[in-house]
Structure formats: C-alpha cells, structure tokens
Image (cartoon, rainbow, N blue to C red; front, side, top):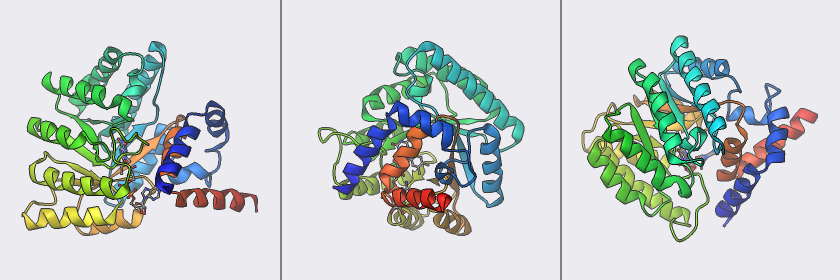
Length: 312
Ligand SMILES: Cc1cc2nc3c(=O)[nH]c(=O)nc-3n(C[C@H](O)[C@H](O)[C@H](O)COP(=O)(O)OP(=O)(O)OC[C@H]3O[C@@H](n4cnc5c(N)ncnc54)[C@H](O)[C@@H]3O)c2cc1C
C-alpha cells in the first residue's frame, strides 16, 4: 500500500539527525523554500504575521511552536521556557489565543511527571490570559500516557485544555465515550503516524469509516469538538449531520493545517462555519514537514518541482 509505505518511509527520514541538521541550515532560507508551504517560518514573528493574514481572511488559528522528542530534563526546561515566551508574544501581538503543543517537547520521554509539571507551568500562564492549550496526539507509544496526563489535569480543574483522538487507533472510539462524558474538548484526526496492525487500522477505508462514526458521535454528544481534516467527504458529512439535527455552526469547528486545502478553508468560512488553521513554526520543523510529505505523496512532486524550479 502506497499510503502505508510512504508514511513509514517519511517517518524514518524524520528521525534522521543528519537530514534534520541539513534541513535546519538550508530549508527555510528562501521565501520560496520547500518547507514554507507548510510552515510560515522559524520565529514567533513569522507565526504572528501568518495569524494576522488568516484573521483577515476570516480564519481562526492555533499556533504550534514546533518541537518534539526531547530527551533530557534540561531540553524539556528550555522548551517549556520557550513556549512561555511564545505565549507572552502571542498575547502581546493580539492574535488568536490558542496554542497546540506536544508532550514529548515538554519531556514526556524523560518521564511523565516532568511533562505534566511543565504543562502545568504553561497552563498557569495561559489560563488566566484566556489562552486555550491543545495537547496534540503523538505516536501510539504515547497515547495512553498523553490521555492519562490530560485526564489528571482535567480532574484538577483545568478547563482551557483540549486533547486529540486519532480514528486510526482501535481504542479511540472507547476513549471518545469516556472523554465526551467528562465534557472534554476533543480534536478528531485520522492519525499522522504509521502504527502496527495489533492496535491500528491498516486500510484507509477503515480509518475513514471510524472517522465518520466518531465525527457523528462528537457532533451530537461532544463539547465544542474540532473536526480536523481536509477530507471533503468527512466535511460534507459533518455539515449534513449537524444541520439535520439542528446543531448550529457555532457548536463545533473545522480545523486544517497551514497551507493545505486553502480552497476548502475559504469555502467553509464563506458558508458560515468556523475554521481554525494550525500554524506550525520554529526551528524544529523537520519532523512535522516529513509527516506532511508522508501523508500525501503528491507533496513530494510539489517539493521536487520546487527544487528544480529554484535551480532553473
Ligand atoms: C488541525 C489539525 C491538527 C492535527 N493534529 C494531529 C495530531 O495531534 N496528531 C496526529 O496524529 N495527527 C494530527 N493531524 C494530522 C491528521 O492525523 C492527518 O494525518 C492529516 O490531517 C491528513 O488526513 P486528512 O484527514 O486530511 O485526510 P486524508 O484522507 O489523508 O486527505 C484528504 C485530502 O486532504 C488533502 N491532504 C491531506 N493531507 C495533505 C497533505 N499533507 N498535503 C496536501 N494535501 C493533503 C488531500 O487533498 C487529500 O486527498 C492534524 C491535522 C489537522 C488538520
């Protein structure tokens, strides 16, 4: 299966230290650089600039200061301090108060307590300022611990926080029922990682069918869910399902990634829906970029055209 093979291939490339170093050195230099289609830049100013352009087009935003997989306490501390600076800068700039982050950037691979402590530090600044914090979902080795960390913080009274479920995983439909009962804000995605057969659907049709079921449950029973997909069939289904049940367009939102299906983003805004664009930025953009290439082989041709275009 091309789908699966391409995800695996780019997941392996994402782990390459050499490629990551080369990419960080050269990848973002030019306005026309390959990665800039998906990542507006490396600095918070780049993200704010992108956020303003989105707002002018009627789109909402969530900002992700890219980083993942830190392996020491010191790196996790640095990442947390950087995130706090980013939140301050976003607040000062007046753009949307909404961020997304990965627990492995805060030290989840060092130990759970470090990551949860660091997330608490972020919430301590974010919550009083009205900043919503979405905890992204990473690969399946982090699913249980991420949900557990989220639920712990929820039980402790944190409410400006949300989580993500991936329809690719068998367990997600059960997680959905439990999290809906809490009243948690869920972002539904298909899943960006290649996962083993023992725990995840391998066929796209199964991932899509599960997404459709979960989408219906979320729109009916969820708390302001985020339907995060570029799949027009799923988007149409969500619209139909909500409208048949008289569920207003203010009770959920669509989410899409920066630079992907801008036509759909605009079409939905014009039709009166809320659309939030995920704006990733920062020096650590390489693994994110590799996942975008892996999930859509057409992007490889886009990138190659860019390479030859720049040389020609
Ligand atoms: C806002 C947002 C947040 C996300 N957060 C997470 C997360 O926390 N954890 C996680 O595992 N995954 C996350 N994802 C990624 C998600 O899991 C999918 O990998 C990704 O969205 C592609 O799946 P799709 O639903 O768009 O459907 P697909 O069926 O894969 O694609 C449908 C159509 O969308 C377009 N498309 C999809 N991907 C691309 C691309 N990369 N480049 C160009 N066109 C494309 C194509 O036209 C394609 O035909 C997130 C996605 C979004 C939109």
